Length: 119
Image (cartoon, rainbow, N blue to C red):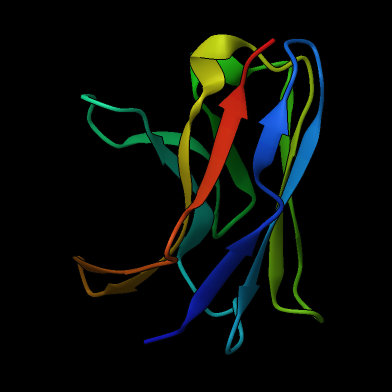
């Protein structure tokens, strides 16, 4: 299992930007998918964006056009650039790395970083 450490969260005003980083203790190139999830108080954890082996990138409808996921395999780091932040983006953001053994997924999670959007 890989260890994931998120950073970059904080308090930002509506319309502002933040860049989240996720540093992995090992190579992220071998994973089936890497990405970001978030969990707001009282809500289920949801996918924000991920990058799947083969080149597919997925975004939640609510963040399309505002958030951009990227990765640096040489640095074993995944990023989430968040622009045009809204109050409803407030949540704990978690980095995820998913391995796939045959058809069974194995997930590694970071500890989470708080993003608060408020005026």
